[in-house]
Amino acid sequence: MQENNINMSQDFEFESVTELNETIGQIINRSRLGKGIKIEKAAFETKLKIQYLQAIENDDFDSLPAPIYAKNFIRIYANFLGLDGIEVSKKYDSTNIGIAGLPPRKKPAFTYYVSLLFNFLFRHPFILLGIVVVLIILFFYPSGSDDIEHDELPSFPSATLQPVSLDDYQPVFDLNEPLPKS
Image (cartoon, rainbow, N blue to C red):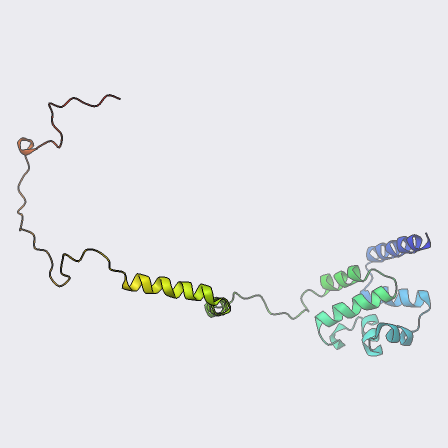
């Protein structure tokens, strides 16, 4: 029952903190001092260096190794102090979105996809064998008929274009034959 009261007060504490627009360092420093915890004890319990904890409390995130480390250090330190570490680290993300220093996402090169394909094929040799067999069959399978030699082209009589008259028209079907019943 007491744990629920503690969690409710922690949630309320964090909500009121975000309304005041305090920085991450102010939130953590106020929480640590409010609980009467020395920074040396916090460093010992969290396994983080004192310099990193001081940098977090002073909002000096440039002295931390990298943005991803800073985010995780903030989460660990906030959880140790009884705050919601995920919410505090989200506050770090929202305030330091341009500082993250991550390169923009780039589309992988075509060679990346080719290497993935070859990697897949060599890890599955039966698929590779099947593709090779199909290619061999397609290469050696005779296409067309063997009656016509490939060297000679068929010769067609040279036709001259003459005007067509309807008198020369021959129907394909017999006019005397009755039409099929539908």
